[in-house]
Length: 361
Image (cartoon, rainbow, N blue to C red; front, side):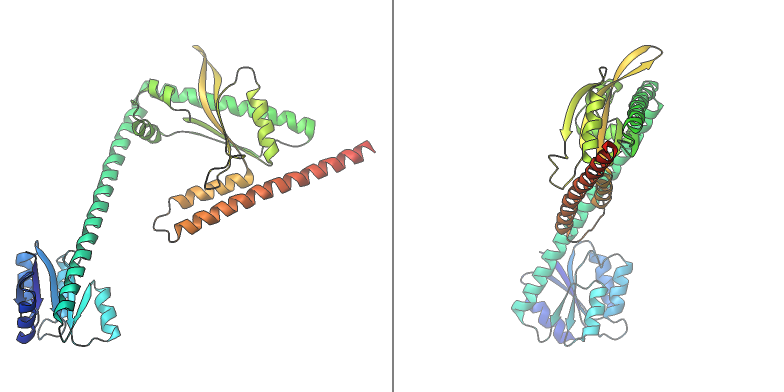
């Protein structure tokens, strides 16, 4: 049977609530704040609720709540205020202090029992949820610690560092070839096919986490075999047709092998994400000979890249209200960006055609 405590300096109120609740609860009583704190100290682990009068001589109800806060009990034991008549100001103060509900005088048995029952159930659910969240937080912290430890071991491994050097060489190879294509375009067409190149090596933490999540062993051989995005190159273009032209020219080079292609420009993701993804096998040349390394290339327009960067930042914001509405707005923005990209491309084409006619004349 659950234990509750009735705290009221009026004996008639204590007796009335005791007889009203004794069939469903193990009811303890206290006639003042000091006595109440003693009972709470004694039964703090199995107290289901406190029914508390605010107006008592000596230590009043607010002082009791303050002491319960200091003892760490306000968030463990629900408090229901016994009240004849409370102003809005007093009620607001009580709720701000962590009070769960009010029991009004004159007491009506069914209402009193329902308020107590509902309050205890809600409080229990809240505490269980908070405990589950805390357990999940601790589990994530343990996982993060493991990832950091394992990542540090990877950093210290000679074979891993050699592999990272090979991936870095593959990135340099890709960047060099892109810059050569850019120079050729600039000379022949008087414009550049891309605006910028961004490259990155996946961190040891990310490598370990991804292998672990996919159920692969954390070894150099496993990284080479199972991961395709350790080396990443993002190419930012001005117009959509430049993306396809540049990607085609790149994969037509006879020593570049296209392993996989995902076109999220013509087939965008549900959230509106647009980008052209290529997984390539790229040759590198080291002292020990030629090797082929996997490189992930992403092609986006300036507008697509801006959208993707913003969406990534917003995705990890916590406690965002109206998340579904925000997702819808982001999708609408992505559609607008696509329209803008193609409108700008058509304007460029019109300018090029005008230049052609003027040059011909």
